[in-house]
Image 1 (cartoon, helix red, strand yellow):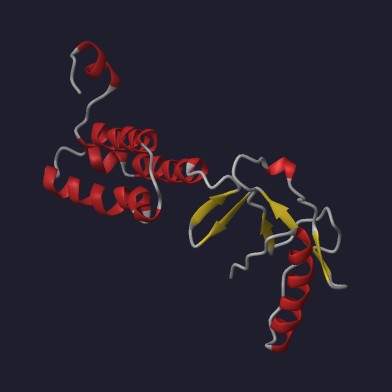
Image 2 (cartoon, rainbow, N blue to C red):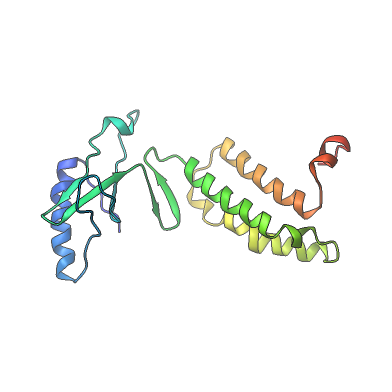
Length: 174
């Protein structure tokens, strides 16, 4: 669940009220006992335009007499990474890391010449490509973001067609 507040004071009062409301339904916040401790419930501070994260009030938020909710720079929500500056950098890095891990995991299968190229393409599309491309329609990608994703996808194609760096450099295969 996400709740939005405009100021630190609103967040302090609002989280206490929200905690009391959730307690009536038998639910609870996961808070830390100390202001510097980690809490499962977090507050993501998003500064105004042309401001920095450091400029804002990012102290831990006291929640009644129960504990504190810490402020974080990024938050995972519905399998996406939301950054304090609302950029896609961290999200794309996580997706590309997962994608490259799957490329390495399926590398022997993708290089197997005894299997038809159609089968290898289908496995690459379903098992590997989906890890990076799923949910991208919700992101506003810039030209550099799109090039970054295409570069990572190029690694998959190199594995699929058994092209190594030697062939690319000296035999001019791309």
